[in-house]
Image (cartoon, rainbow, N blue to C red; front, side, top):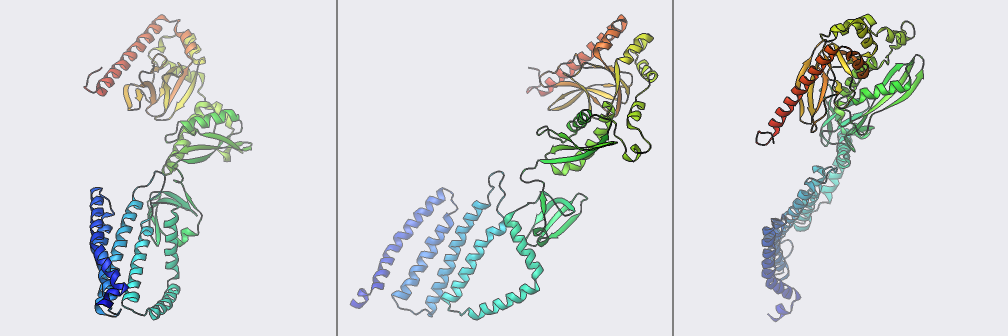
Length: 493
């Protein structure tokens, strides 16, 4: 008995037996505090308190106090249970860390791939298995490791391409050059990324086709991501204009079309650059910024359509190169496209109000205006703009009240109608505008010249004043109705 008490192992065992209840009580107090804070560390602390500490003491006492050898069944069972408990505690701790890392990160930073978060768990499982087999059960793993190495070499040669794709997939997931939802392009293909896994990446093209690409191919390709670092993208569209146009007029026309194109950002503003000077053509690049690359074809198409309308309206012809060189004279064709004076006079006579003017007055109005063409949906005139008088010759237009909440229709204009918004101011962010319902041809007359001619005919001047007052009342009526609809209690405040 005296020898047992003198044994250092016995002293340590007694100390552990005495301290174990205190440690367990302290761990229980810590676990309770973590529970009150709803902390994820409560579970690993509970595993340490309930399983790891008692199993470790039992294993130590069995070996140090009772002197049981390593190959004893009791020591092996206790050691195996201790390794499993330690692995469970480590996995619980990694689970807390993974949850924190996988949580939504700061704006502008991509989430950590789940595959990378699985690697620490896999390492814990492998280390626990190695300790269990080699350390507790004393299994010689050298032969198994040798056989595994030879087998891995054979498998690596047989599965060289799939393993290369897996390695490339791992690199793609760790580097994250793109994510599902990004628009990417490489070689001659572009599309939206729908899925990325260990072996392949799936991309949906603009044609709606799903393309499955091995990650090894993507890893060795020059890839463009249109959504990184920001969604904003500069779209450059080449346009050719007749050489006879001055660059100033051509740039103004192209920039006006770019600013009127839906989807083009105001900041940064679009720019037009001369890139080719070669009679009979001049080449321009129009750079426009968009915030969604998926809209690039639509924006390019809408811009091209508006360039045609603005070129006619501003007298900046767009030549066809094959005809410019041999058959077609751009400036002469542009002049020929302008209506004859007799046609303009017939347009003026289409108006029920202007028909009462004499020939001299109609001639004066014909000299005071120009023909303009507008595309469907384009703004013809706005509050706060010019105060010209417009005569609608072809198409339909509409007077609407425009605000951030949308458009409120006021009235429609048809062939022969006169309109102008010089007398209609904007009110509380709501401004009257005239919009082309479909393609329109209008005859725009200078307000000063038209006023001089109209003032000579008192009946016409009075009729225009009544017409303006009537439209003003309709605008006010729609404004009051909008205010009623937007009031909290349904009444105008």
